[in-house]
Picture 1 (spheres, rainbow over the protein chains, first blue to last red):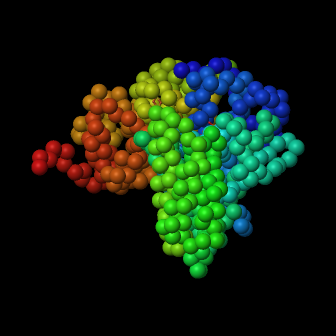
Picture 2: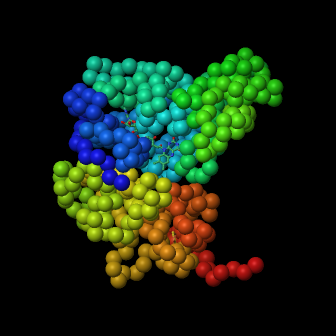
Picture 3: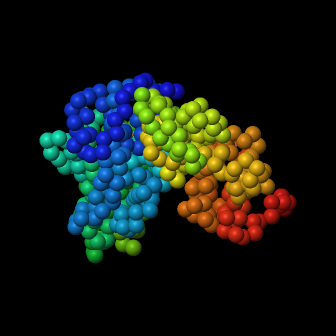
Length: 289
Length: 167
Ligand SMILES: Cc1cc2nc3c(=O)[nH]c(=O)nc-3n(C[C@H](O)[C@H](O)[C@H](O)COP(=O)(O)OP(=O)(O)OC[C@H]3O[C@@H](n4cnc5c(N)ncnc54)[C@H](O)[C@@H]3O)c2cc1C
Ligand code: FES
Ligand code: FES
């Protein structure tokens, strides 16, 4: 399969990229890892007039900690995340999620920024970023904005990024002590999108009370979804079998999966419940460890 | 059209290409290196795996223009014609790591990067490591043995016997 013809530009600075974005407007698409975009172009689901390859722009590929914020550059590859010691130490959820995203070759190309910018509830990073209450840095010729993840996803393939803007960085607040995080997705085979996926981050204080809960769901809602009622069911309480069961029930009730080859609605709701329980247990274990 | 220069198996090649040309087509059609196969054309099977600046990628999902200024290694680069086989090639040969051979170039290129990062992988690590490569013939067991064999050879150890074990 061959994509429709397009112009190719490979700017070496953000300013140059902004000028090109201004010039082409809606007709341009940014290329990061290309592993969502190129398949769509080959299938002719997307036929942009211009591809703006941002891989030659320096400074977008680092994972750095600045005070209370962990920063992930938009072009950080999944394979880089797999070996990012400091990130994994504070957020073990990234060790869980990266190995479930696609396969090793795809992870060598696919970027965390692209995974979010694609705006697809089937991707795995959106739910993780919701659990961690991350923010997304979006830059344009007129300046930079920091958008909380809850305000980032607009619709299918649609996000807060405007046609003349570029996602440059993801910012994650550093967790308080005694925080743990975990992710799992049910998949039919390696490289498949989730039948259902659940991301959890919890903080548990010295008295065993949950003081923070973040829970995100993958591929069981038109948009990446925060399981808000499940979070509320945990915060201020002890993590017991009862509170966990209640949180799991809310996640299962509140999501809106659609039936497809991966399963019917009832099955997917049941799996959201199971995974929510398991990930709360796992995050809680990691929080006290 | 875009002017690009890509170093393939150590040889620089310049070409004028359409931006939509895929790397796999540059390799197979412009450079006549047909060892790199096209299986699914949808980034699922791994038959088109090559190394791009040392990293294994599915060349059906990379544009040739993305490889501009970079180096590409294909299965043809594993050993020169007539030269001794590369340990991976020897491992696949000795362990019956292929039947029809369609997946083999991609498997070997993926295994090249795997062994570079992890010279002494466990069987489980190998299975995860080749999880982006499909084989419809072998059932994978002999591919895993072939990679274990190559790892041992590269470490200068005696590879395990390739004789079948009957239990
Ligand atoms: C076989 C296969 C299996 C996969 N399995 C999974 C999986 O299990 N889980 C999962 O989460 N993903 C999966 N993916 C998707 C993969 O992770 C993609 O790499 C990812 O969705 C997109 O990242 P990218 O860097 O490749 O983005 P690209 O394909 O380059 O871009 C995707 C979209 O985002 C836009 N964009 C990219 N970067 C920016 C930016 N910095 N600013 C503004 N807009 C931008 C592009 O214009 C495009 O519209 C799979 C892909 C393949 C091919
Ligand atoms: S042909 Fe590229 S992955 Fe199958
Ligand atoms: S040997 Fe036939 S596909 Fe692997």
